[in-house]
Length: 318
Image 1 (cartoon, rainbow, N blue to C red):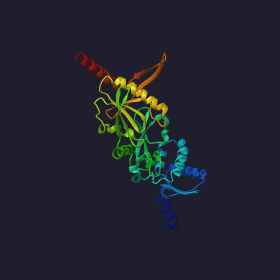
Image 2: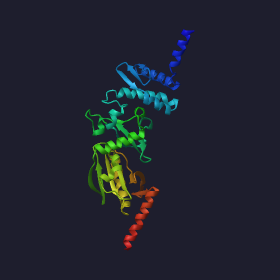
Image 3: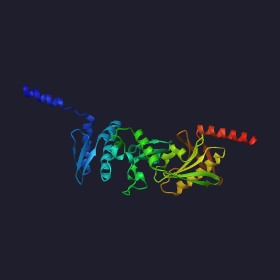
């Protein structure tokens, strides 16, 4: 009876693992085998060690957290992507799951929503068509890092390892860019419209939108912004009714850049105001051999245009 009691007590001391963890481990072992690796799990399930063509320890806390947010039908792709990514990035000079290591390497870059697989990136929408994506890597501190590698997007499973939320990580990346990078500012002219070009050393120039006041006077009605590439901002102040012509010139410029340059970002024009970026829908329409611009501004910007028109008329009468 005593022996039976001791055995029963030992079983009681061993907590049963959640069925989700057990199923995920089975899937991890299957995917590892398909990749040509044997795997051994840590007793607490926090990591597994792959043994095969190379030996590698893969952290699992972020993967487990991400799996709980997904349907089980997504798990095979999620697990396969996680292990494949771990092997592909095994030679990186940092552990992406260690926030202390990667904290100074975090940056953001702006990408078109249509170009992204939202399952594999961490980001937030600036507008319906633009996403601020969290990146990491030696290249975050310059066009290329000391190893010559470019910054890469951070995966959700990696952020899941950190003691902060994805939103906090994005804010941290923005602060890194603001502190460590300085944009150059030059004046330019687009068909009679004065603009300022802000250019940075990395693809994270748009992070400085929130700090435009550090570079130039920002009027109360904001500025027009074109984003021809991730390292460049073209801005024009919203100060008078001449802003309508500025929309046209910026839109034509952004379209030309988008069509002729590899790595171009957006052919559209945006309005930066009160800490928010809004798309000014402006379509180029060919009619009777001529190109016309049809602008459909967002409601708030339409009200600004109306107020500018009234002020302009009042100034003319005076």
